[in-house]
Length: 276
Image (cartoon, rainbow, N blue to C red; front, top):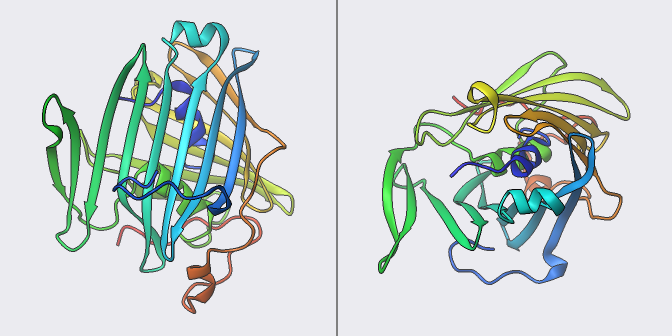
């Protein structure tokens, strides 16, 4: 299963359910709720996308990205809705993924993949449903250094946990090596007191030649305010942040209490050596 166009753009807006059975947290545990309008080929409000960060308790967080097409595009896609969520723990000054889940509903059918990270054993596993057996393990790989899904990579960058990145520099982040090795790249463009621009390179079959670039605009608080890209079969897609929503104020409690973590730049922080 690969991300739908709306989801691909939502994740690219920057880097770009408690998954292990925990109860859904109450509404006041929502730390951030970013909602976007998606235009396709100049067609306004052709879809919607959202990015939400929740607290699951001390040192535990859940981030979720959703994407859904509307109107004629919903009919053409079979009313497809994608949800990509990651349960994360605060570990070594970073948000490390514990369970990452890809869920897609289309024409009444559910496709699901669940990736489980075990840092004590040094493994990452992919589980999928099997009729009559529930979720079964389909693949296992080694955790050789830090590995991130797109959702956890987004929030580590969003919260400035990966260190400062100068204009013109490129950050490379190792993704889940299934079904083949994956790498995300973020290159910072111009920066002002009001914000800046970034370019995100993602490997995915929704792009021509399976490699796509998403151009992102963000404000002085590193909140993605807009993005655009070109996706195979759809052409140009644009996402615009809606005024209603909630943005995270200040660092996470664990980051604020960690003396090894410097306060994030008011512009952008995104490039500590995470692959060493």
